[in-house]
Length: 113
Image (cartoon, rainbow, N blue to C red; front, side, top):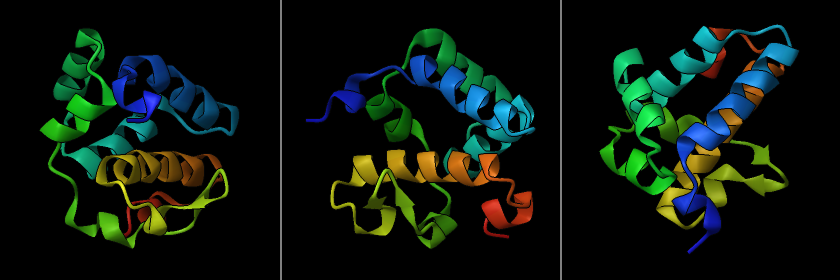
């Protein structure tokens, strides 16, 4: 089991926001990406952050977007579509979406609209 599985989402969330903000994006846009991927609205996301939910429990509670399989490309040299562990793939999907947001992609493209 990877250590990231037992890491709290709340400990990584500020890093996602900081990465996006350094590139001129907003926390609201990060939240929108998370909502698209997981189905968690703002209130539900805050509950998970406040509770210190692990990535394992976070994604177990999520309703993954049916278009998540359209997320392709590499994160840290790993192709997200080739990740075999389902939980790790979901975490990589989230990483990839935040990366695309930070790189300035249009929100419609990030959200596979």
